[in-house]
Image (cartoon, rainbow, N blue to C red):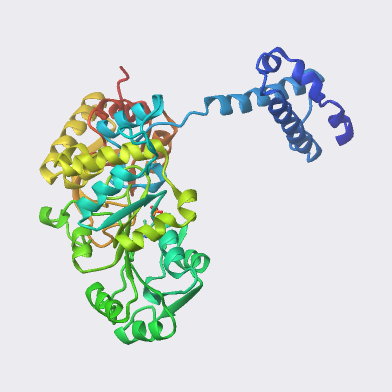
Length: 471
Ligand SMILES: *Cc1c(COP(=O)(O)O)cnc(C)c1O
């Protein structure tokens, strides 16, 4: 039979649409979309038949296969809903799985804001219109010891807005050693090129000096930007101008200095022995005019970005029309206020990301022990289960050279590739993400939320298969 004869066996779009499994799904707003899916599927089969990748048996068989595929595509859409992920990687702020998880307070605040009306932009006492960010700005300013604060969609937006406001018609000076890319989609040079009238790149990749900034000001810089090179370090023959010195240069010439701190270290982690990132307080104390950071990194809030600092500069940003495009929605504001209140009232343990970062090694070890015993009990043979000391990273581009010490459950499934086990763990529900090291998978309890242990063990048992007892 030639290719053309095969193609004749393809059912028409109309014919498929009449199939009860398809017709039964057509709703008032899905008819066009369903027709499109059917057409795309028929087209895909046409290509496969034409290429000879598929043998057409009978007309009925072809129609059944096309319909099956159509239904599979429907189910893929209908399943839609995002899947829960148990994070056993030990990476606390994992951008691909949503960075900081939110605690109960923030979730309750979101629920209230979502379910009804709230005093978003109205002062209930006077009835007058007011700023949606008023409570959050105030709290942030108080917590960071800054004159004022403004919140936007993410830290990228904060940098964009600040640069556009202060250098949109002027120029921004930035060291070549700080022209970073963070997380693939934040490429500072491109953002600056977009926002600033002119970008004055100064110094070299490894060395930038005071005189470079001074020259940039002579050349017209209206903003000196310093960027925390979050996810990498330049080592060796290097020089950078410390923030304090930059502040002195800027003051003398009347040019504002902004520091993109990035990770939002509001809690003094250094006091807990977690060194390597300046806290927001330290940066403010150095005298910078403005500082920006993410809300969903170390701070542990919902996605958002903040610019804090001099009131006159923050006011200019608020008035910038871009602010309207970058503003936060009511759900995020609700969650953010709740998290900031937890900081304000000292309830740090209620911020999950912060709790994970500060959990001490012995607590992690004890959870690892508990998980290991459950696994051993369910899978008495065929596995090697050990407890190992290792390092986990905070993630989100923060603390690049200072990983946390952690304790993991290391499991080797004899006769099976660890990559395969990891893939099975990702495929189920809830999905489980683990680290793979040679022949083993590693479960880091630091990022497993309290109460997730049982589901985790069930999924492990399912993924290991034969050696384990299913409940
Ligand atoms: C993470 C980071 C950004 C980007 O922040 P988003 O909130 O992800 O947009 C910008 N600058 C620095 C220094 C960062 O660490």
